[in-house]
Image (cartoon, rainbow, N blue to C red; front, side, top):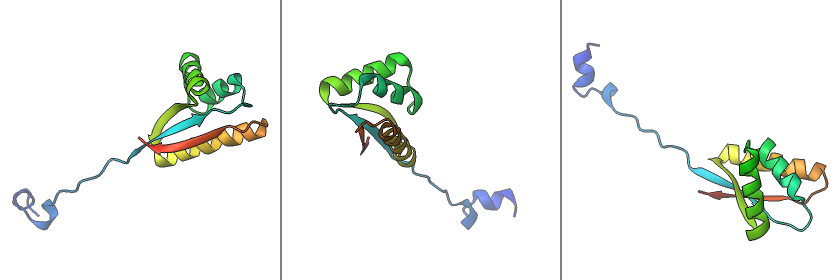
Length: 102
């Protein structure tokens, strides 16, 4: 097919639009048993935050009851939340995570 046919509106010239996936926040929730050090460790290992960023989020969880660990597509947010909770359970902590649309 010549290039001119493509430009002139043949069926092949239809435009395809892709929607970007929605973003979701992974939110860590405060409890009275999970240690601050463990929360920092989870934030660094699972969510790849620097020590300063992890400390800041941990303090937010401690002081306000919750803190955003990261913003990802749904599948990644869900997987990271599951890893964090699994890691906590292995250490005997009741850490909880929520996923909310950003």
